[in-house]
Length: 108
Image (cartoon, rainbow, N blue to C red; front, top):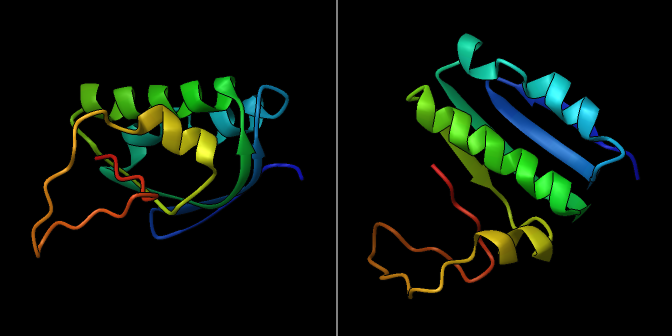
């Protein structure tokens, strides 16, 4: 499946496959996004697969949010390749206010 990106009120839903073949679409859609918005929410629930280039594109977007002091949130279970990339080796402490499931990706 090709890559589809839809948005509504700073919430961007990514659907399909994010790989080096359609990376230009992703990069064009999110180039200079933090010049326009202070907060971006990426919903990756419908990402079926992602390759290394796709993971690196998300990591670059995350780094840009940090350098520009903007907020980036990634929600959804997404595909396991992305989860494995961002998975922490350290156990996450859970509280009533901050519970992160074993397959949930949260980046801010």
